[in-house]
Amino acid sequence: MEKTYYDPADLKKFGKISEWNEELGTKFFEYYGKVFEEGSLTAREKSLIALAVSHTIQCPYCIDAYTGDGLKRGITKEEMMEAVHVAAAIRSGATLVHGVQMMNKYDKLSM
Amino acid sequence: MLLKSLHAKHSELSKTERQLEILSNGIFKDGSLLTFAEKIKSVNQFPLRPKKIEILQLNFGYMCNQVCAHCHVDAGPDRKEIMTVETMQQCLDVIKNTGVHTLDLTGGAPEMNPNFRWFVEEASKLGVQDFIVRSNLTIILANKKYHDLPEFFAKHNIHVISSLPYYKREKTDKQRGDGVFDKSIKALQMLNEVGYGMPNSNLKLDLVYNPSGAFLPIDQKALEHDFKIALKEDFNIDFNSLFAITNLPISRFLDYLITSDNYEDYMFSLVEAFNPKAVANVMCTNTISVSYDGWLYDCDFNQMLGLKVAVSEKHISQFNEAILTNRTILISQHCYGCTAGAGSSCQGTVA
Image (cartoon, rainbow over all chains, first blue to last red; front, side, top):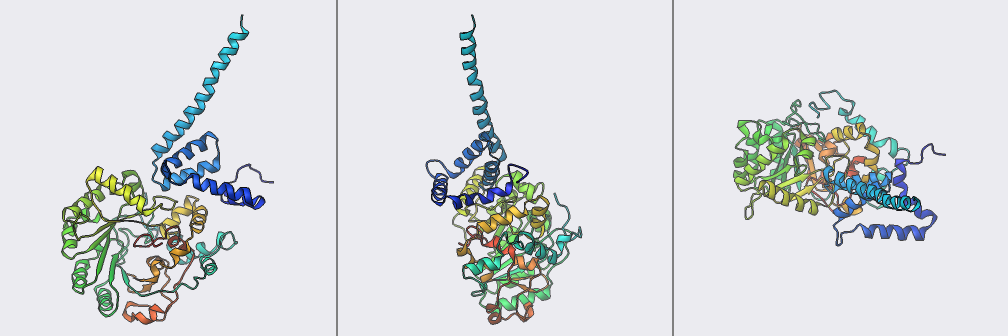
């Protein structure tokens, strides 16, 4: 067994998931490719969204992939960090907004 | 920032044999990746053969006023190798007697060769269709004796191609040295002033973009669009086209890839982006590269790897168009740099 859960080299093997289920794997990669094409949003905007989401879901493969993708597209480190803060703000906001649930429950249970 | 060439530092990577060894070992030896020969065999494009020789690219010497971190020539102020008048004369004879229609002067900084202006004057009399000088821009401001280069270029209808890694200061200076961005901008404005790159002018000014790190360039047209808008808005600069060039894993860029632990990932991205359509038009199919001492190479990169053309007449003094057109082009794994994505050459993308 591997001694770590994540190996950077595994990112290159992503395509291999199709080997154990070709139909779903192929459909997924087609879908993935289509999602990132220029559309109403530019490929650049999509790259930044992907970077922010990568941080939210804390996926090391995605962070590597979309930092590299952003560099290629000329996205600056300032833009990347702002995107990460957007992710962090939503994430911390989501934690804090649950404080209202805590307050409600506290009030309900208290005399 | 590097202040000395690998050559001056006696780095192991200043030896071409060592670079070729690295490019053939590891991931290419253990079967993780196909060698370039195996790859082009798989798409029936082996061996790689030239078409018509159209471009003669002359390296006027490795001397340069800059020490760029990615430089595949390992050029710098400490390099003293320069082309002599005798070799230049042999090049002029070849231009006169062959079907070459494009002349491409490079270096180092070709302008630093003391016989640069003499050569340009002589060569421009020969009626070359496209006469290119690859200028690093900052040379124009480096010394008073170079300040009139824009006028000199214009007088001889030189096609100026200049490196500007990015339209923002930080990335340019990181790759090319502190202060390079500001000087490059000033030099571009001076070129614009004499008509270079301006609408309705015949004086051509193209820019070269190459990524400032271990990643591949994106679409050339998209980059050109971004560069045009940014340079116009911020500095009122005009230019004709932008060429996106992939950094090849040799010399200083190879050194950077290895020391930053990016070598394997970079080679994987190059191989993954292999485009068979780019193979047909790689620049070695229509270019001959000449070193400062007159040796002939399939391309500038093979020159830096010491891989002379695979024919017995290897010197400019023995230039034989028919024999050279029938040669086999020498390849190694660095060639993946020219076939990745839309391809890469000194004239930009090829596919």
